[in-house]
Length: 640
Image 1 (cartoon, helix red, strand yellow):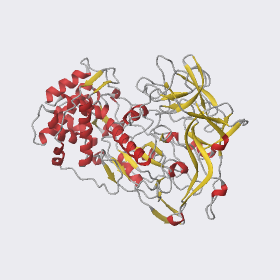
Image 2 (spheres, helix red, strand yellow; image 1 turned 90 degrees about the vertical axis):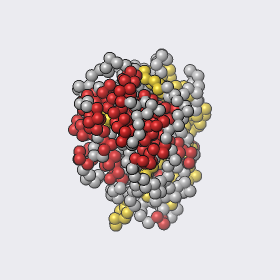
Image 3 (tube, one colour; image 1 turned 180 degrees about the vertical axis):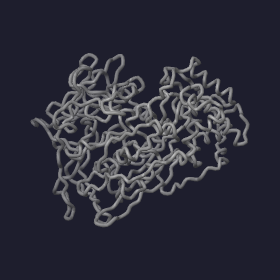
Image 4 (cartoon, rainbow, N blue to C red; image 1 turned 30 degrees about the vertical axis):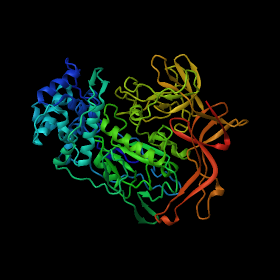
């Protein structure tokens, strides 16, 4: 959570290294393991496969636990073990309001103790129940795919029996048991999970898993589950309150407080009137760097920061904390905060062998589609940003900007769920490329997940590494904002200085054999892009370059108005360039064109809040790993 975490607050259920006892996949093929477990426990095979797909996409993750302490293809949760084995991680912090007009109070986290084992909810301890039902030892359930699948089948069968229903061969009769398997304690979330499972059954799936095995679930387009069964589960009805969510997700109202402390101090967000006052142009994807329970405690603390939505990994449950008209303090850049919605996903970026569930990816994608349609936000990587794509406001803030959700967030899969996959839109000589490595097989080495300089566990990644020359042996390109002394960037998992991520678009500077150069932070940056295994696809788009006669132009981290636009009583905000320069002959992909805007809201009393809008216009560009802004008067725009 760019907004949330330091190591003292983390409850990192997800970040244990793979178990040393995890062995290779059993001789029986994974597909056969599902068939065997289904037959043995009396569960329809399609139900077992679809539940597993929604939890893990049939991956075993080398025996490592998920974000919420789930193990194996069936996501059997053993949070106690995951917590005991997990190191602590953090990725820095900054004043998440990101506004120099107000003294930065935010940053000192309140003391919140993680829950004890006894306090953990049942959804985080399903492996214990699987031990009781199956008789299989806990260690085997954690490390053996066959045992894990049978443990999950035993849980489903038990849920079906406990509902008073027979172990029917008809998958449509298992809706209630599937809803129970989610572990959700409210009806809407349990039903959403079950609906997604049955959507998987209707559409069918085929996938090569992380163990290299192909698993297939044949489509059953006509299945009509008994959805009324969820009413008999005895689950609570969540308070939907003032939630603003699509009907296809489960959303709960857990409000963030708006309180005054005296001496001009208040928290933890600002009242607004969006989109009447300002457009909402961005959706910012964060990870929480904390467990679900800690995350909710933090957002409800009036002395801390805020964001609009939190998403739970185990089942995709969504909590909304702010009305969308109000402004959260989550991105560390006040211009972006004022024009964005923040989504915090339960997870930790420095844990490559942990994993987010398909359930959370799917509900997040549906929420983003809803927000995009409501506010006319384009579904692309110029508008759906990671926190790691948000720029520092001025030079002094660059080094403190957050790096979540990091190189292990699967942007390609996310945008496929959004209905906007990254596909080629131009021929081989295109002037623009969209970064698009194959997530599962693209495994660049990162360092610093557990200890500085130590290699992270090999894992799929959606980011490519950028070199100063077309060679893997060449130094990485420099980021003078992160390293004013001119040092090379590093392979650190939190070092964004030489990184381009899936979906980001860049202007092509040169092509040479298996290497492609892009314009990046004022320099050529090369990435390996072989035709046989490309890491980018060719694209069309608008690019800009300095206007004729200009040797270089400044680049900004926010698009603020000119001084003459500010009315009396509103302090003029400096239009301060970043340390980078955009040089003549270089080209950068264009996003939005926007007038300079500043939301003046430095006090609790909203009567003085106002939006200052100037005549100076800016273009948003993809400049490095983060976006940036240039004045429209400084550039010439053309089609690549």
